[in-house]
Length: 189
Image 1 (spheres, rainbow, N blue to C red):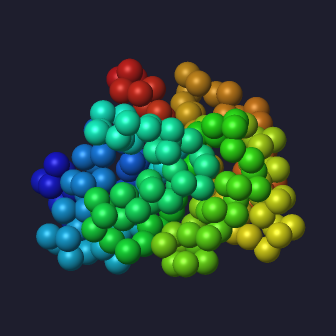
Image 2 (image 1 turned 90 degrees about the vertical axis):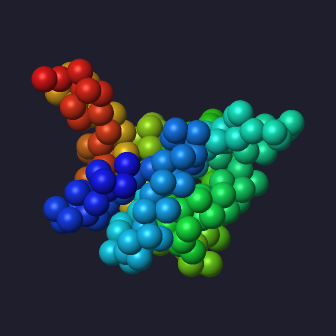
Image 3 (image 1 turned 30 degrees about the vertical axis):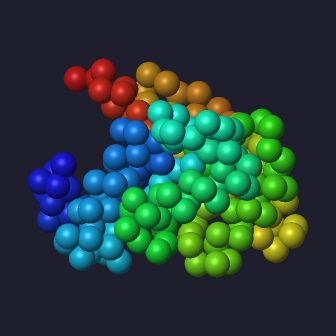
């Protein structure tokens, strides 16, 4: 993986997107080791995600603390991500998906705490209904908190649902887009 990352970096690439559970957490670990060896952390725009059960196969007996959008899951996930990534901050942290059990207020206050403490610079949200993103951002703005600034979702020429609600929402909210699956999840030639 280091050779691929070197080629990417030497070609001018600087945005790396991982998640707390990709490859069982190894993606964060590999990127962290690579940045530490190359001493290029501040040249990289690093995004990661939380929500998924990154300790699914770990020794922890109570898994509910390590998944979902609640404050404890967020705290534990970001702490683990920072350790694996060998950094003291994350450029862009995504809510990987909405769990529909944690309140908007808890999620946005918990995320803002990370921004206020310098652990996260920007907030993003992935695979979440447009109406809920608008609700989160309205709550954040009304309470002096950091709103979501990037939306990540599935979008390709074969999967265009993104265009119905997400694109207009992002334009209205002034949010950037980071689509995934644009090459049909490897199915397009």
